[in-house]
Image (tube, rainbow, N blue to C red; front, side):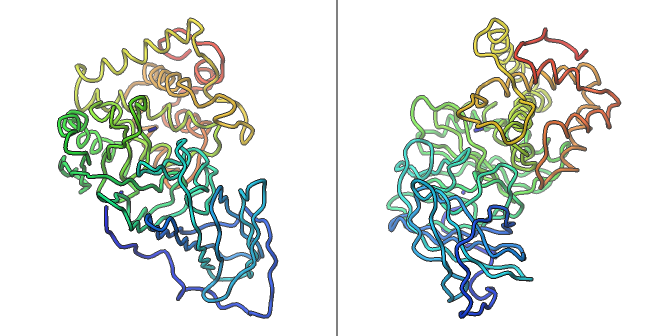
Amino acid sequence: MVALAALAACGGGDDGDATDIDAAVVYPPTADLMRDVVDTTLAVDLAARSATATITLAPSTSTGASFEIGSLEIRSVRVGDQPLQFAEVGPVGEQLDIGVPPTTEPLVLTIEYGWRYHDNSNGVAMAGYTLTWPYHCGNVFPCRSEPSDGTTFHMTVSGAATGMALYPAEIPDQAPSYMAAWIVGDFERMDLGTTAAGTRVAMWHRASEATAAAAGGAHLRASFEWMEENLGAYRFGDEVGTVSANWGAGAFGGMEHHPYWHVGSVALGDVSVNVHEAAHGWFGNGVRIRCWEDFVLSEGTVEFLEWRVLDEVAGASVADPVWARLTTEVDAMRNGNGNGVAWPQSCGEVDILDDGLFSRVPYVKGAFFYRAVEARVGRAMLDAALRTFYGRYGGQAAGMADMLDVIEEVTGFDPSACAQAWLASTTVPAAGACP
């Protein structure tokens, strides 16, 4: 895991699209976290620490809509000019329940709110970036943090005291809530070229980071092009790239805020980190995970692709050290240092942070699972399975079990025993082909 400044938001609905409602009918605040969110449009004022969320709901007979709001100060909720009743529930108002009219057309809610800074990787940091993975989006905007939920986004971010705010004006396909992000800094754009599909690839860095950006982005355009050609079309825009995030000296890694993913400044020069975050455009974002238990479908797949793609576009001199690092990690796990289950056999029962699933285990054991499958079925067949999976589930949520089904369908090989050995067990099998 690891947007452009001064761009105007487009689409996403506004008050003129709002459904007329009868002011004489009062809809009391009602909990409903299942209302389908079609689009989320955010207008954020950094100077005032305030924002407006314009949220388009799909038609429904329900008279409720609920969102996670964390520490937000909700000031008003309305449809057009008509105020709606709302209530904040939970120990510190973690959930916003709204009374809404039933409609046969999309319903556009306008929510005015204030926000505050959070400097524990859980909201808007005073250093100028947002970081909300896995379930802190409610500290930035009214949201749903379930990884299976997806919505399109439109954004404007204004009021930066210095520098520029970098963010996507639009995320045009359904995306998980943590993908919407901004970052403020004195950035310079390094053009890396355009892929055959027409996607512009770049690095955004500070003046002192030009050398690191050139090193870290050396194979980024070619890698992105390979994924477009071999996995499927990218879903989140025609300009992409890495943005240097000043997370601090110990923060090595990145966060998949596509189309402008953030990479910690200390990792900016690392080729594999940049490719890793780019690959989340296909797995983790392009295909969302169904439950946190399916975390390996995102991180394990991408960790494998990090090596696979670099082996293809950069050669063994670049890719071999990536796999050597993974081998060192898996050997340490085999010796009892931090090993665990990469794929819990449940759905909705695991807290990814509190229950320890967020570790290197899903990354490393996931990568070794795919390498073992590749050794069994061949590189071309595994590539075809990954392409088929993305073509089938792109823009949707899926689970690791779906990946196993597609691998068997495409290759004729049942990977269940291999998945049990590498992903569902607390032990580490010997490296090599699947049984």
